[in-house]
Amino acid sequence: MSGRKPVEDWLTDWDHLDPRWVEDPFPIWEDIRASKCPIAHTERFRGAYLPTRYEDVRNIAYDPEHFSSRQVVVRENQIATGGGAPPITSDPPRHRVARMVLLPPFTPQNIDKLIPKARAVCNELIDAFIDKGRCDAAVDYAQHLPVRVIAHMLGVPDSDGDRFRHWIHEILEAGTSDQYALERGFGELTDYFATHMAARRAKPGDDLISYLLTARYPDGEPFKDKHILGTLRLLLVAGIDTTWSGIGASLWHLAKTPADRRRLVAEPELIPTAIEEFLRAYAPVTMGRLIAKDTTINGCTFREGEMIMLSFPAANRDPAMFPDADKVIIDRKENRHAAFGLGIHRCIGSNLARMEMTVAVEEFLKRIPEFSLDGEATWSEGSVRGPRRIPLKIG
Image (cartoon, rainbow, N blue to C red; front, side, top):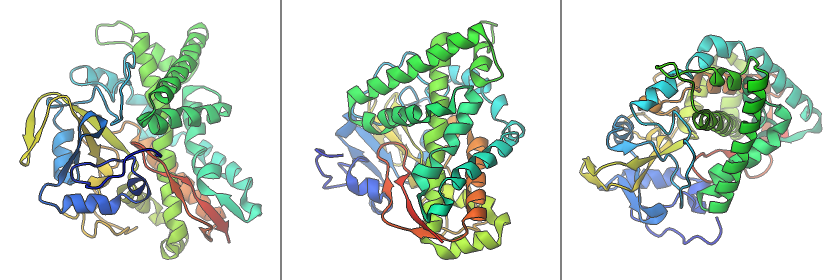
C-alpha cells in the first residue's frame, strides 16, 4: 500500500502490507524462522507478534485462555462489530454453541450434494473464454465459483457477486489500514443480510439464512439477530475469499510448472492429493489473536493487549514439520498442513473448500490441458493471500 514506511528489519518492524511481503513472503518467513528468535514483533498495528514455526503457531492456536479470538484480523484499527462473527470471534464457552450449529450444513454428505452444481458453474465459466485463447484465471474463473456456491447455500442472488467482491475487498484488504473502507464495507454487508433475514422471517426457505433463524441456544432461546448477522458475514467472507485464493494459487502454480500440470492431466486421480499440497504450500489464511494475558512461549513474552498474527502459511513452510517445505510436491504422502487452522477454530468449511478447489482444477484441466502464464500475477494485500490477476495463454 502506498504511503507506508518501508520495513528495514523484519524481526522488529514487520508489516504484512509491505509490497515485498505481498509479492513474495516466503523468504521473509524463512529468515525470521532461522533467526535467534523466530517470533518477530512490530510496533505497527498497535503492537503485534509474528510466530513462524509450526510448533509455536500450534501452541498459540490451542491456548484460548491466553490468546483470545475476540479480534481475528491484524489491522491498524478495530471497529465495534455488533456481535462479531461467531464462531470465529468467540472464545469458550460460547464458542462451542456457535460452532456446533454450523456443523450439519457442512458435513461431507451435504457438500457432496453441491458437486454437480459446482461442475456446471465451472463449465459455464470456461465456455465464456475457452475460444478466446486467453483468460484471467482469477477474474474470469477462480473468483466466481465460491461466490455462486455460497450464494446458493445462503439463498441470495449470485448476481450480487460483484457486491460481495467489493465488500470483501473493503473489509479484508483496504480495511486493514483504511478505517472508513472497513466501516463502509462492514455496514453495507450487515444491511444486506438484515434485509434477507427479514424476507426469510416472512417466507422461510431451504437455505442457511432460514436455518440460522430457526437455530436455538441450549436453553431453547433463538439466536439473537446480532449473532445471526455475524455468522452470515463470516460465511460470506470466509466462504469466498479464502477459496477463490486457493483455486487461483493452484492454477497459477500449474501455469508456471508444466511438469506438474501435465502429470495431473495424465493422472487426474492424483488431483485431490495435489490440492492438499497446494493448500499447504499456498495456504491463503492468516488469523489474528488478541493477547488476553501476559504469557511466554519458547522464551518469547507476549504482552497483554497486543495482537498475534497467527500465520498458518508460515507454519506450513516450516522444515521442522515438512521435509522439503519450500518445494511443491504434488504427490506428497504425509501432509498434516494447517491451511484450515488448528485448535478449536479449525475451519468449519474445509469440506466445501476442498470440494470447490478439486472440482475447479479437475474441470479446468479437462477442458484446458495446456496453458501458461501470459504476464505477471498480482497478489492480494491483508490477512488472506491469493492471486487477484492471473493472465493465461490457452494452448
